[in-house]
Image (cartoon, rainbow, N blue to C red; front, top):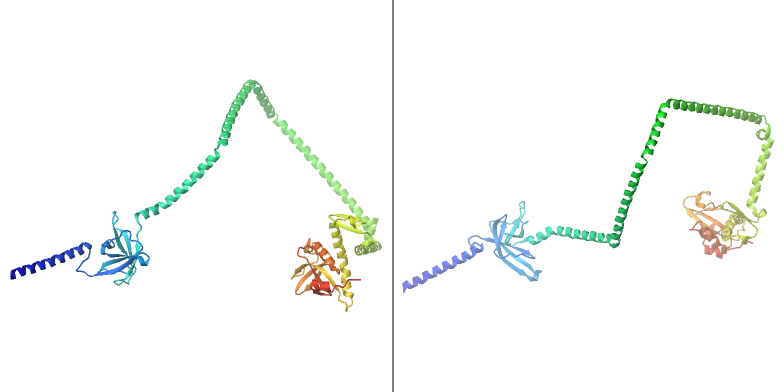
Length: 452
């Protein structure tokens, strides 16, 4: 009985040994070691490209661990949690990246640990590592072929466009025109052949005459060569003759100038002696005084004509270099009427200003003008900016120089004058004055006092 118990105990020990060896062998085949302590690290991937449990974990081609577990996390964006089992002899720097790579040509996957050797800080067991996935062979090939594909597509488009252009150019009408062109070229070549044949025939028939002509030309050149001395003498004689003519003309010109100077000196002597009209004009003081008086009288006459034109003519208009005199204003065109109105307003400017100065202080004098310019610096009265207008009034108001035209008392004329000036000054607008003070145009209309 005791012997049978020992046998059973022996069988039990052998069974435990077999189980232990089987478990150790299974873990050995998986890459796990029961004798060494391992550390676990975690990596999260969006995709693992066929990575399996027990896939190796490599560093520079050396196995330092294996994939212990792969867990699918649908609650966390369908990520994959991979547990890496690393031997405790190998510490991982903080810069470590766990990249899934192909281990062989058959597509077996593994994890390569990439890190910076200069890092001095290390991960602790249970830390989460950064994860990357190597591009597959298909992706790499696609990435390399993509530029070639794009170039091929562009080339096909260009070939298609070229074929369309060629098809458009060489249509039926173009082909017909080309046939006609080739036919015309053939006809041209035939005509050239016919012309060259005729020319050859002509040369063969007229060979004797051409030879005689050439002989005559040769005789002429030989004659010229033999008489070259005589020809030189003739040319020298012509040169001497032309020099003589030039000399004769120059001497004659000098004589004429001397004669003219003598006559001029004679005239100047008579002038200095007071003879003749010019001499009297230069030497007679009484005649000079009378001329000065005549000029003064002429100046007064011109001033009177300018100030009182109606004493001499009814209307006068100078336009484009011509003078128009009319007796009936209805004969004028609207544009000429505007010109006359402008001249009237220019003549009336001084009278209105005198009226302003002589007006009774108790009765405010209100008048209207058209403002054409407003500047910070004064403008000369003869400036081209005034378009050759006379009678421009300058006033310094509120720190600016303002320029006005067409003084009038009747506000019903304002729109007409404004329309006239807008042709040359597009920014022209009406204003009102009470004495020397500028007032609003609307208030000026209310305070208008018409001149009797």
